[in-house]
Length: 137
Image 1 (cartoon, one colour):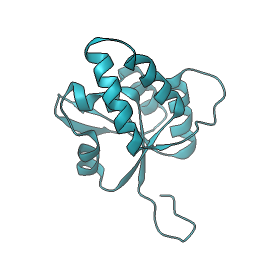
Image 2 (cartoon, rainbow, N blue to C red):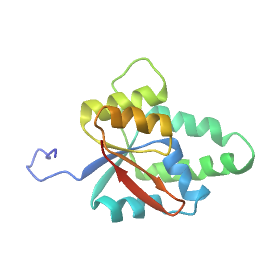
Image 3 (cartoon, rainbow, N blue to C red):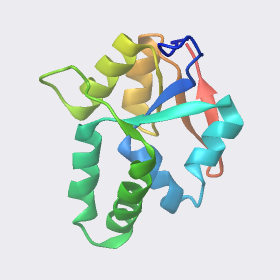
Image 4 (cartoon, rainbow, N blue to C red):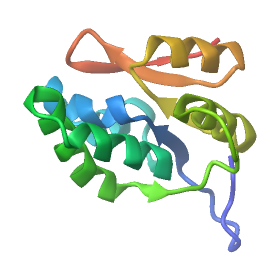
């Protein structure tokens, strides 16, 4: 667990993927409350590339566009962090950040979840439609 400069322990860091934030609208699940109930105190993080992904989806019509627009508002509750990875897909940047900073990742993307678990990174995903579950490898 990381500590602040003053020596107090940090909250658990959780990097959120676009679909984790979109779940708030798609599944009527308060993602932030559900994360707190699952793991206790935490610091929600988001990459600028995830924000860009959400902005792109937000331009579309229909349920996904509406979910992405709401997710952009929710993203304001997250601390924006740079991945430190110059090239690669958004998923590769999430994997790189989580691997180098030792944080959990909240995602519903099965491929990303499997890649993260393969590196020993804990993943939080929807279990059913109304609750989050912590997966560890």
